[in-house]
Each structure stands twice: as C-alpha cells, then as structure tokens.
Image 1 (cartoon, one colour):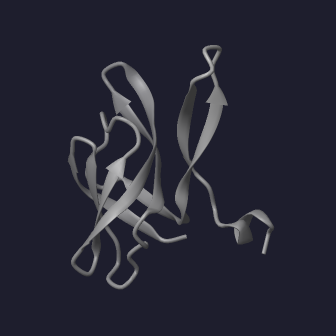
Image 2: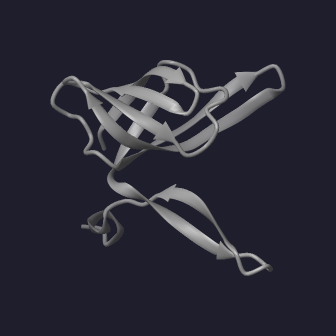
Length: 112
C-alpha cells in the first residue's frame, strides 16, 4: 500500500506528500489511523481523506471527511487505491445519514 506523510493541515484541507511518481489518483481515499497524546489522555485520529488535487510531482491536496483536530504534520496517510464509499443508515424519520468510509478495491476483498 502506498504511504505518504501529512505536510500541512488547514481546516478540512490536508496536503500529503508521497514519493515522486507515486501519487494516488484523484478521488482516491486516503486513511489516517494514528494514536496521539493530548492533555485529556490518548486519542485516536481515524479519518478518511479524499484526493482533490495534485500539487506538483509528490504532493496531493485532500479534503477530510471528519474534523482535523489533533492532526499534525508527519502523520502517515495510506492510499486505499479506491474511491471512498458511503455507508447509509435509515433514521426513524426516514431521512438518511451516512458515514464516509474507505473501501479497498474488489481484488483485495476477494483475496487476489
């Protein structure tokens, strides 16, 4: 799996650096899953980023699907190799809410 490092966090926008020539495709989902220490104790950063733009040869600009509070430069972001998906659940009122997730390509699900 292709891994990069968070280079900059500005609100929901996160720039991620990869090795030259190994940029993830536009719309791909990147996953950050890392434990951090805060004044309140240990917390987990677990978020999905969507690649929105290529910036040069080794950086992508992404948009976070969750708040970026606690995210810092240097965190590892993994390319899933696929676009993000949305799990939907029906609420009592009949409206739908969704949780954005990253789903691996079908080849990884099938074990190929």
